[in-house]
Structures are given as C-alpha cells and as structure tokens.
Length: 108
Length: 247
Image 1 (cartoon, rainbow over the protein chains, first blue to last red):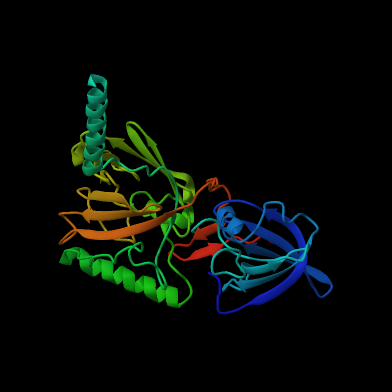
Image 2: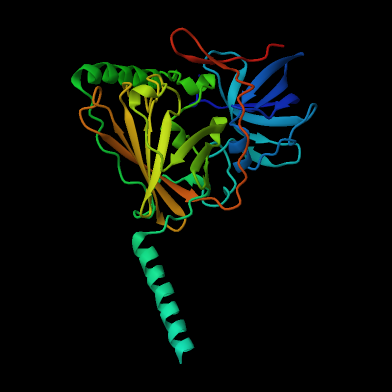
C-alpha cells in the first residue's frame, strides 16, 4: 500500500490528530500553489507511538508540522509516517524501525 | 532439654519440607507483563527462543499452502502485501495472539485460573487450572477454544482445543482436530519461554513446534486497544488500501 522505497517531505497545518487504534492519523493541509492539498498520514498504534516518545496531546488543530512519509502507491494524498518534526522542535519516529526511536521501556 | 529436642525436631521437619518443596518444584510466579524477546544478534542463546521445527503438511494440504505462500511473496515484492484478518481488526486468536509484533502480554494468576491478556486487540484467553479437557468435538470452534492447564514442576502445561479453522497461525491450515500444547516456564528469573506444539492428525504429517520468548517488563501499564478507527480496507483481490480524507 505504501511505497517504502520513496520518501516525501510535507510541511503543513494540522487539522486533526487521531490518537486511535489500530492506527493513529495526522490530517494536514499542505500549501499547493494558491490552494491547499489535504493529506492523511498513518502512524502506528498509540502503544507503539508511546515507545517513540509520542503523547496524545502532542498535536492539535492549527499546529504547523513537517512530516517525512512513505507515500501511498495509489498516488492518493496519503502516506505512512517515517518521522515528524513537532512545533516544540522534537523529531519523533513511528515506532521501532521507523525514524528516530527513544529507549523503549524495560527490556522490550 | 526436652524443649530443645522438640525445637530441633520441628526445625528438621521444616527444613525437610523446604527441600521437598524445592525438589517437587514449586510453581513459579509468572504473573505480570511480558514483552516479546526475539533474540537475534548479540542475544544470550540461553534466553533467545530455539528455532522452530519444520512445518510438514500432508501432501494434499502442502501444495495449496505453498501456492498461497508463493502468491504472498509475489504480492509483497509488488509492494501490495495481501491482507491478513488483522487488517480488518479481526482478532488473532490462539496461538497467534501470544506474539503480535512488539506488543506485550499480561499474565494474571488466580487460584483456579490463569488469564492471559494480549495488548494488541485486547485479546483474552482463560486457562482453567486442574480441570479435565473436554472432547474436541464438544468444544464450539472459536478464536480461543478451551484451555486447561496444570503445573508439572516448574512448567505450566496448557492444552487447547476448539480453534476455528479460519483462525490460523501464519496461514497454516488446520482441521477441527487440531490440539495445541504449550509448555510455559521461566528459563531465567525474568525470561519466560512458551513452547507451542501444534498437532493435527488431518493436516500435519508430524507435530509442529515453535517457541516464543518474553522478558518481564516491570511496572508496565497495559495500553487499551479498541479498534474503533480502522481506515484500512481490503479490495476483492485481497489488497489493502487506506481511506484518505478528501478536501
């Protein structure tokens, strides 16, 4: 579904951050010429994201972020997160093996 | 003097009981949260899981199974991996739920039952202790079947029957006669092994055995996992897609 051989970097404005199972999603509006293009970015599950340092309140409507993603093969405006640069300057990954990771808790 | 002798005898009895208890092997405490430990490079070979046995299917099942594996490999090469039931938020069942990606499991021991909760999909299985197993044909097929357990020294032996045929471990076919035997024991103070043996006189030429290893994760609080926002779907060719929001 995702082309993991490719990487696309998008900078835009968060419309929603869905802290849900089986996946979390970041919805963002990205400037495209004079208009906006909307992208849906899939993340791991909350449990996996917490191992990468994410918290459920890390993003809110209106936040500016930059995300690096593996795009959908279909060409639709969606992708799988590799890493995200948050408004507070932190760069967070998407669980083990996807972007920067923080030490996982106790022996995992 | 009599008192001293009585104390000495009493002490000897207590010590003898201790020795007896140790030689009999008191069941260890395996309650708590356990994270998968896969071994790999640099892993302690005593703690890492030993390799699985070969999976030998009877010829009439082996061919379709191999064809399915080949089409899976081809689909993965195209970058369009074929969907598993989990994509649709269908739970894994026994035995797959014992090892889902990096998600932990929680073992809860009570006097008559051991309950195992998997974080992924919040799956629950109940192991009834020291109760007879039912006849396979009397257990309604389901995701978890019916599990009974007993301690054999330091090893928890769990017998499971009644897994429905659509609930497969790594797409391995099985019949309604499948029986799963698990031997669960601590191989080190905070390392647990679950040796899983699948027997199926209809489908398998010989039993298939694989082992899972876990490390204890102290103080971990299990994260809830309710699949209420599944935006992935599967088309009629079995390929997974994502619903994107249109603007």
